[in-house]
Image 1 (spheres, rainbow over the protein chains, first blue to last red):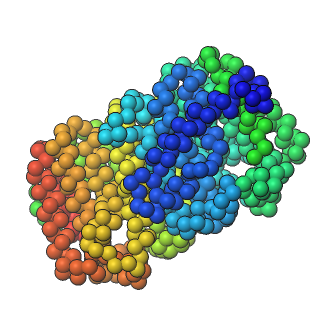
Image 2 (spheres, one colour; image 1 turned 90 degrees about the vertical axis):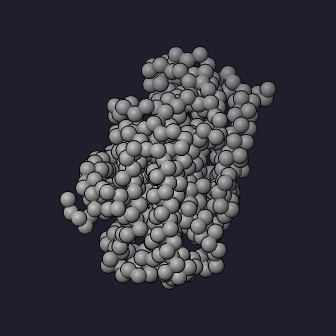
Image 3 (cartoon, chains in turn purple, yellow; image 1 turned 45 degrees about the horizontal axis):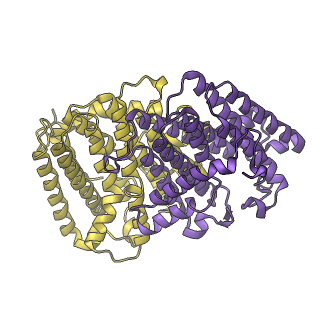
Length: 306
Length: 306
């Protein structure tokens, strides 16, 4: 065990992550683009494979472990949330949105496959997310129907107009506007928070969890989701493009409201720490036996440098 | 009863349609854009409400009636397939795809709400489709979990890379190419056929249907889906834009492969008739008591003038 990877939560996070990451990568590689027309399949795989920190899948699997849930369901749910995240990046990068040409150090999907190709790849990735969660009979998956239905409900809610897509719409409408902290928080709660919180809830939905546990895990997910965005805003200011793997300083250049603009750099950092504290407090009251992976992931979100 | 609306199938289709159409419009009006940020909700409603023949919802409800299925589930499924259809039109009309400015006689969504607005509205409509099928606990819907899971599976498959999105990708890649009849059929089987066939299967999934019935209904849906596209190609040549409510002659102008280009006008018409025959033959062997609405819908598809 490497002391450098040992977290406050008392878990070797790098060690813990190895198995879930391998499972998710293997599953994504098997499923993404399978049976698709050639060009579409290539664009889908380009958008998803070989990149990304897989934070959302890790949250699903950590939450599933915390509730002692069904691994097969969690791996499907983990891939599904990652596909929703990946499709949102593909569409977000398009010229009519952020017009970004670099993502994870590679040309963005529309640069590589054309705008129409990127549009369709994103659309197909969203559909695939729901396909994974509700496998057809011939896939012989052993996931109870009630679990499939609940996962579909949680994912659709997190991805849609009252979740991620809604947050993007608010973001779009707020360029150049002076938002209050409340408005900014509401925007991010939807734009990035909904899917991060959804990841935790989906993991919890893969096993038995009482109302107390679900409520606490939702609070954990909400705090973590907001912290993630605050750190993102900080990194957009302090990191360079090479470290980020995407264009730095975009927010200020695009006149987007950010936590750093609102609170200053030190204020944003203090806020991120406070949110981390909230996440840990939520885990402390969830009543589940082993939440070390969830705790360590929260710490990692705050400490990440890219 | 109006003799003009009496079909070969022995059903007053206009009379039959009245109730399902009212239910679907009411449900769509209640659900689309609810809880969404203002601009996003407006774009979603603009894309879906007050327009469209609702063929797919009618197929869902007719198939549900044929199997004596659960109406509440079928209305949700009917709205869901319409949302998938609507989102595909929104994205299809965008400048990077067909660049169309007119749809159902109105400016297209990106003309009205901007490209980014159209992109997000389409994305949110797809998510909403799955949200409707798997209602959250607080909606107090009475749909068995196994039915929700099966509907999610069917819809995702029909919408994704092995269905509608896949067909659009083939369409995109085939502009300016000479396709064989087999290739053209495969493209349309995915692009429009998958969702039409999926509508029938989803309706059937709302009730008990044995393997014989499901297989026959799938064959009905496949024949109807293909016939729909053949008729679409015919109308693109013979109808004017005012009648169509969209720009006529686009296929030839865009150098897209069509059945008319491949078979000539008379050949395409004969093919549409043959497919109608196949649809009726499939209904004759499905073993279900009342398939008159499905039969009448097949006739309507062949006879429609816009």
